[in-house]
Length: 227
Image (cartoon, rainbow, N blue to C red):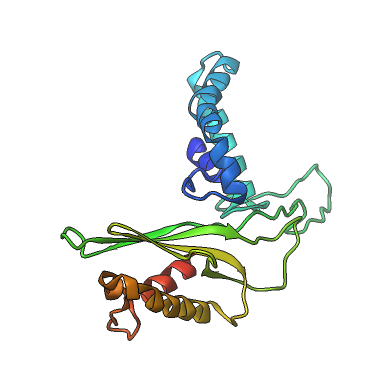
């Protein structure tokens, strides 16, 4: 459990992204993996003189600690160690004043971005792989929360790329002249419909589904909502 929690904190589940914190983590991936899978275990074993009971206790406390201070990409202080056990410092005072976020020091972390893939006509000669990829992202810096809204918009220089039976669509996460993500997605579909005049076989992405949206827009809505 400890190793899995540390891998989550180090964001080692984002190997396909190549910007910002993801690029740094990718460059250090081998070192981090070596520490988590080898060095950490060895150091704990050496310090505990290979005592299984003490080792188990250390792993348990470390997992509890990191679980309490990290949640969904942000470092915060949870108010509980576990269900029913609250964290309130007490040194024998008759009256103890305490507030819920007494020891919370907010550290802004980057939004969590993930690429997105799906296939059409899977298992046939006409199988098509479609990949949505993030190339750049504007994120808040220095613990500042920006008041401006950012959206997933097409990369301006080369938003679409076709390689045999694979279609890559490239996005940036930034300010836009659109009012919402839905309008940005509609603009993506519009530009794609102009792009596929050279690639007729991609037209199936503009087929309308039961909910009245094209296949491309359906996946775009799902992708942007998840991110």
